[in-house]
Image (tube, rainbow, N blue to C red; front, side):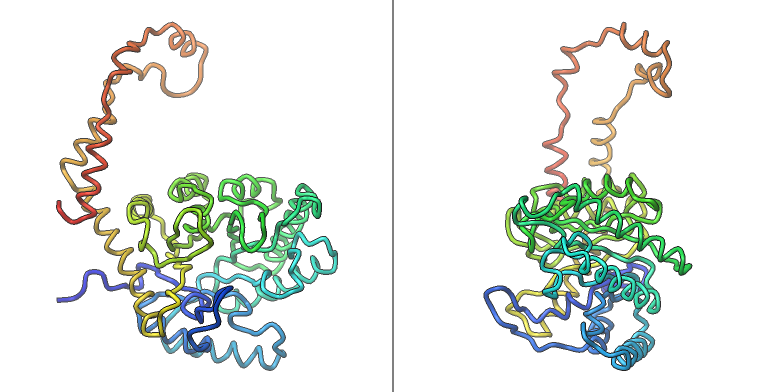
Length: 389
C-alpha cells in the first residue's frame, strides 16, 4: 500500500539550500556536519521527495567568485536540476552575512554600502530569473538598529522604499516575470529590525511605486517570536491579495529564532494554518525555512525534511476530516446561525439604513447570555488532532 503522506510534485514542497545545507553551527558551537555542495543538496532534496529548491545568491555562488567560477557553478546546478526534476520557485539575496552590511544594506548610513546592496541585488535577481524563479524575497535582517541615536527610522524607511522602487523599475525594464515578497522579523540579528511584522510590511507596501508587484513572505517563527498569531498574519496577507510566498517552520514563543521542523511544537496553530491554506486554495510553494537539530548527521537532515512534508500532509488530511465532520460542522452552523432579522441593515451604506439601525431595539440581555459553545468546538478539534475521532 502506498504511503498517503508521501510528498508529490503537486504539493509544491520546497526547501532552501541554507536549510538542508545547515552545518549546525550556532553562536556557541562549531559545525557538526560537513558542508555539502549545492549539487549534493539538490540530490538530497530529490531523494526525500521535495518539489523545488530555493537559494540566496551566496548559497549557490560564493561572495568573491570570479565570473568563470560563477558560470561553472551555475552550469553544474542547472544539470543537477535537470537530472532530478527539481525547480527553483524563489530566489533571494544575502544582505546580512558579510561585514559590509553590519549597519544594514538598503538602509545603511553609508551611501556606498546602499549602492553596493543595489548592485548585489540586481545580480541576484538576474541569477534567480536565469534559474526560473518567479518570486524574489527580501529579508532585511540587518535593516535596523541597536540604538535609535544611530539612525532616523523615518529616513531608514525612505531608503528602504527608494531601494525597492529602484529594483521594481529594474525588473520592469528587464521584462522579467518576477514578483517581490517582503519578509518581516522583529529582531535578531539586529536589536530592532525595521518593519518587524507582516502587518507592518503590508502597510509599507502600499507606499511603493509598484505596490502591485510586491507582496509578503510571512514566516511562522518570525511572527511567533513577537508573540503573535501566525495564522492571522497569513489571513491578512491573503485577504489583501499579497500572500506571494510563505515560510513554514516552528518556534517557541519568546525564544531566539529557532526554525524548528514544521509542526514539531505548535501543533494546533500549525493545523489551523494548513487548514486555511488548503481551504482558500493557496497555490504557491510550501517552503520549509527550517533546520534539523544540531544533534543530527545528514541522515537526520533527511528525516527532518521528510518530517516537515509528512506533518503538513497529515494536517492537510486532518483539515479535510474537520470539514467533513458532521458534529463539528453542525456546531459551526449553530454558532453562526442567522435568523435573517438583520438583513435590512446589510449591503451598501444609505441614510435609510442608518435611520433604521439607529432606531432598532436589540435584545441586549438575550444576546449577552447566549453561550457560543467554543469550549466544545475546541475540544472536538483536539480530539480530532489526537486521533480519537
